[in-house]
Image (cartoon, rainbow, N blue to C red; front, top):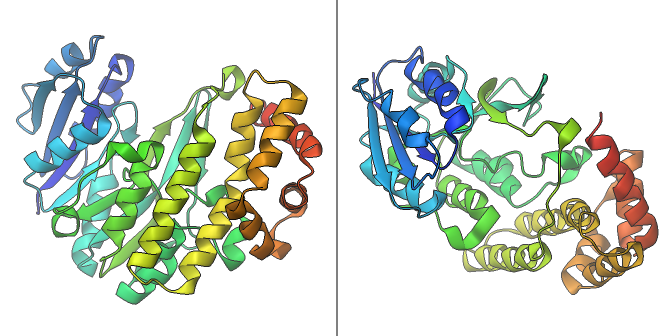
Length: 346
C-alpha cells in the first residue's frame, strides 16, 4: 500500500480542526502521513492539534505566519508519500476518499485522480458535479484537450453551465502522484488564482488523468442566510493582470487556438464575479454601473464578447451576457442585485 501524504495548513481554525483531523485519522485507507503546518495561529488551533500528537501518522509543525502558499510548499517538501493531497483545515474528507482515489490511481497508473465535492452550508449540503460522467480515464492528449484546456475556460456545450468555470481549480479535490508535482511550488503572488495556476502547471504534463464522480471533499461554506459579502477593491485589476499571465502562458508554450478561445470565454464569464463584487461596494447605483461600463470597454472584454457563442446559455445567462455585450450596465446592476438577493435566500 503506497504511502499517502496529506498536507494541512492551519491558520485560526480552532473550531473546525477536530472535524478535519477526525476525517483524516479515520480514513479507511491507513497508510498515511498527516503533515499539519500551524501557520502562526493566534487562537487555540495548535492546542487542538496537540490532541493528535499521540497518533504516529500525524506530524505537527509550528511556524510564524507565512501564508497558505508557504505552508503548502513546506508540507510538500516534508512529504515522503508516493501520492500527495492538500486539505484545508476548516474542511474535511469523506472517510473513504483516499482508499477510492488510491485504488483508481494504482489500477490506471494515473498521475492525478480528481473527485467531486460538497458545499456544506449550515443545515444543507450541495453536491458539485464537475463532468457529466460517473468516471473518466484520459490519456495525455485527452487530458490536455478536456482538462488542462478547461482550466483556461469553458468551450462549446460546457458553456451551458457557466457556474462551473472554476470547478477544476481546487488542489484539494485532486490526489497527485509525487512525480507530477515534486518540481512545483505554490506562488502567493497570484493571490486568489494561486490554486488555479498550480493546477495548470501540474496537469500540463499529466499522462493519465482519472475523474470519479464521488464526493471526496467537503467544503465548509458560510451560512447563506446570514452571508455578508466583502468588497474587494483590487479585484478588477488583479483579474485582468492574471488574464495577461495566462495569455503569456499560452503564447510561450505555443498552445493551440482552443486555449485562446477558452481564455476569452473565461474573461467573458468573469463579469459574474466582477459584477457581484461591484454591487457589494459602497458606491452609488450609478457609479457601480459606470465602473462596470469601464470594465466592459476594455479591449480584453470587448474581444471576449465579440467571440463568445451564446447559444449554449439558458435564458437567464443569455440575458446577462447580452447586457454585458451591449454595455447596458444600469440593467446589469439591477440584475446582479436580484441575483445576489436570491443566492442568499434560495
